[in-house]
Length: 390
Image (cartoon, rainbow, N blue to C red; front, side, top):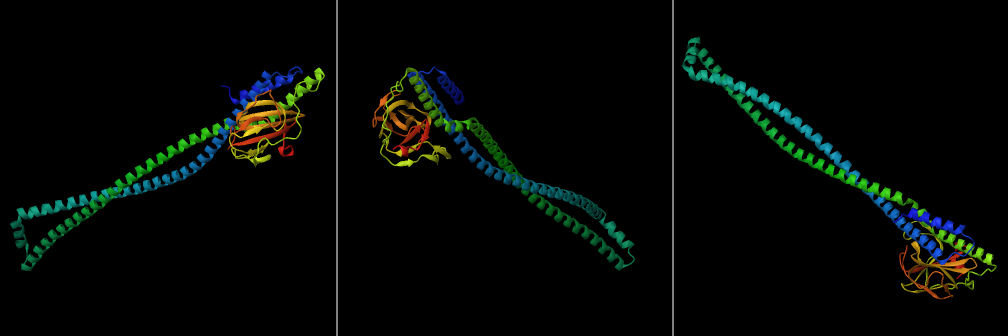
């Protein structure tokens, strides 16, 4: 299936060919082909506009999600850095405790060795030691002093050993607490790293979604301009048809050789109902932006008969892009009317219709938000306010 730009080129080529034809009335088949090409282009433009609108909505949503994700990621990175700093400090404390423990162990080992040798000597040579103390003493007081000194030395050694053991126990307990804290901090660090990785993954997914939406928007960007030009394209088509008919009539010497049915010049309302959207610029209910409204919308129920505003010739009765099922009637004298968004059609191209004749049944086809009749009046192919003709 060709894309919308190929269809536009084909439409323009057909249009140019129509201009270059000899000054005769275009055949119905050629006219229908031209209208079908235009309808197809308009349908593609509506699709592209919807894609563009969808992409813009996605882009807005993703940008907001990325903002929130970035805030979460910043918080996760900060938490990871904080717990890593705490873990580093704990590791240092454990290292310090291990060094203190090693030093205490060394002191304890040295003191225990000294005491062990002294106690062994006392046990093995206790009598000699005491005899040496007695023999070496000058008198009883000197003897007593020497015994007391020996007792104090042994008592001091025992006290020092006890103190070192207490220090070792204290360091071991502190180290155990630090190791528990380290294990807890390592778990927190792992959790923070996992959370950071998860957020990074989510961010990457949203980035990919954003890039796709931006690509979709870029692909559909040209659709809006061509969609807004759809109404002008229809006008150009109608003006060309009128020019061709005038040229053909001039060639055969009669101004009404194309057998157009002239109307009274005063249009009747195609349906009875309130005007839900007037002629002129408005905020489009589907596209969400100010777009020129080339007709009026008349609110009616689904299936309400739609009548010809005046007598004329049906130029088009088919699907017409954003207009949905539409009817275009040429009333002569440069005037034509358009009836859009019908649920079904009751006439066909080339058919002559009388004023008030049922030509379609109201609906909500094409770019529509509910049942109504989109009614246009065109003078010389250009849309004019229908209220001046009803």
